Amino acid sequence: MTQTYTFPDPPPPPAKGSGKSGCLKWGLIGCGGVIALAILAIVAIGFFVARNGDGMVAGVERAEAEGAAAGAAADEAGCLRLAKARKTEGLTDLASTQNFTTECLRRARETPGFCDAVPAANEFRATVRWIQAQCPQGGQACSQAVQAMIGYCAAGRPKASADSAATAGPADSADWTAPADSA
Image (cartoon, rainbow, N blue to C red; front, side, top):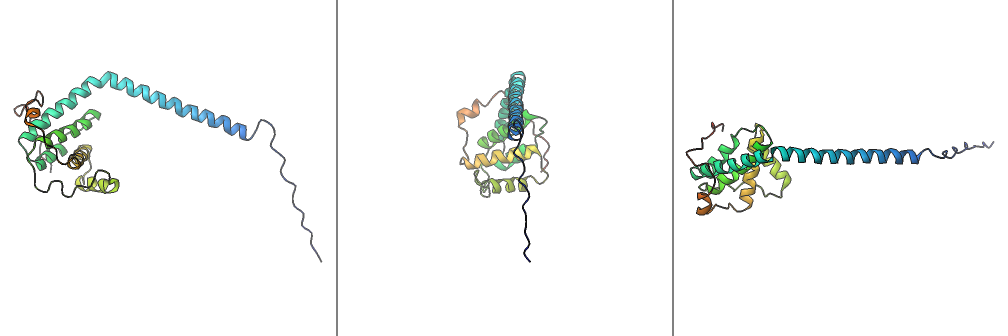
């Protein structure tokens, strides 16, 4: 005895004006929303920079002068300790920590073996692991200081010239006070 199997009827075709055109409409609305949010973010950043830009620049310049003064009296390891201990309360402080560290290192006495274990700047995974090892308690100041150290070592430990040390900025070693050593 042979059994006959009958296939069900295929579904009807989609009605006009439904299906894919609805997806397209909602996709375009979604893309438009993302573009509007991106424009809003750009405007907000522009407003923030226009309102706070002078203070940010002054803070970064002050940090560079402090770093130059600290570096004149420290070795590279001391600069890194000082930079890791800096207080970071905002966006300006984060940028200032990198600038402080860089200027301090450029003027500091060399510490033997300071750059020996530093990973190359283009080795992303090794760099992340190394920063985590250098900053076991976390903290933005530590992370920013170590990133500045990586850049400094990758650049071949550039040192400031005697002329640039004399024109480092308004602060000198008498104006600079070291933060409490937390290392």
